[in-house]
Length: 368
Image: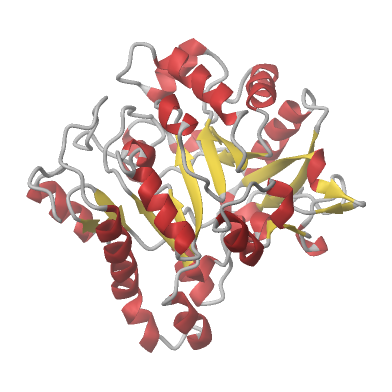
């Protein structure tokens, strides 16, 4: 059933549609990821494929909420984007959002079927998404029926990569099993968190710290993502390390801020760090994390990943996901460990510090 109370007005909806977004019902949205397009043309894959083994051409990028309680300076969203501390709209049915999101993805990809540059076998596979990244915009976990939506993904053998900014710790504490849960950590201290996140909540730091503690109790695979902004938040590596250790996450992604969208009016292009700078900052954080290693990098995305040493078994890194095993386990109704569905990481994906880690001159990369 569609809602009567819309989260965005028709003018803003039309503007998003022009930007290739598709609005689902009254508060959800879908957009084809740039890496999905690259993968179909065999021009490269997302870092999540390199790090964790997803298939970029079968990944659906979406969000169950266009609203957020922050106005992060690095976000592509503009002044008219929906911000709210509470959900004050009607709630669309999870099944409706799930089915319509799949339809929207398929419709958006239709034109690639006749493109000579597209691998047609990959195109056919793209019609059946295997992964959903709830990270497109807004804060997906404030959707009041998010657990039902996640359960539908699990039941339909679709993995879930969910990103939250830590504003709603109670949602994290009560979240259904997801394949991998991300917490955005973009400041090492309370003062900078206000400057970078521009939160609506006055108790933003208390909420964030409760979310850090909630992450440490999650049984799913967990990750912290640090969006590195030059001359702003690439400071106090020891304090980032303290937050990481407290959250006890499996992976730490240190990724460059991308100078896109409305963020271009808030930040300078020069604040987008080179990959070398991201790598060096990640190493500074790593120097305070004895239980982690720098394992992989994805140069086009300017991102590196630190991995907890527990994922190195019998001398081999196992950061990839065995999605078939995960499907069976999550739908079995039985308790299981995140290590029950790990898969060996291809050797060619690994970084050997000082040997094949990025040390060349800066090259202009496509911003995604």
